Structure formats: structure tokens, C-alpha cells
Image (cartoon, rainbow, N blue to C red):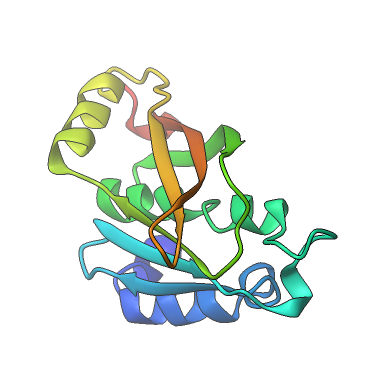
Length: 157
């Protein structure tokens, strides 16, 4: 089912933008390329998503990076693979005092490496780094996301 939906990136982008965890946190996917190789996400600076210090809430910063690489990998690897988030770490660098942005890119080299490392049915844990910037280009946070990728049982040798 999901693989069929992934054939419509504009629909996926719109759906993600009205998905309650994004919509009610002020998170918006600005761009999702047709090949699922590039995604740009915004966290709007709104009263409802600020912390006690009147800066961007850390949980929202973390959430804006959550499904990005999983979605991109599912679309590029196809339905033969399990793709899940395994772990994540966030390093807050400076306060978010404006809208924030991050960009995720997925290269063919990374896809090829994942396919190679999982071809015998092994688990693979690729690590992706997302940097979150404010409107002035100042680094606000660095998020490291580790994914779990493995061929589904029926496709393993």
C-alpha cells in the first residue's frame, strides 16, 4: 500500500503537511523532489511552538527531522525492504529565534551502499546527519539519525 502511495510525491508532501504531528507543530515540507532524493523542511516560528525562553521548542526541532530519511529510503529502495528509525541524537547548538530549516539529500552512492550491505539479508544501520539552520543561516541544531534497513524475510537469500 505504502509503495503505491510513494509514486505520488506531491500527494505525500501534502499529506505530511496536514499530518497532525507536523501540522500542529508548525512543521512543513517545503520541497519533496519527484525522485525522493531531496527534501526541504521548515519549522515555523509561531507562538504555539515556543518554549519558556520564547525560542523554538526542542521537541519540534527534533520532530522536523523524524520521518525524512525513512520516507526517502522507502521510496528509493522499494517494498522489498524494512526501513525504520533505530535511534537519534540531537545536539542543540544555539537558540532557534526564527523559523528553522533543514535539508535532506540522498545520493545514489548511499542507496547503492545500502543495497550492497543488505543483499545477503543482513541488517544495516546507515547514519544520516541533518543540520537545522535559522533564517540567517546560523546553525541551531545537528541531528544524527540512525536507520534500520533490512530485506524483508521473503526476499532474503
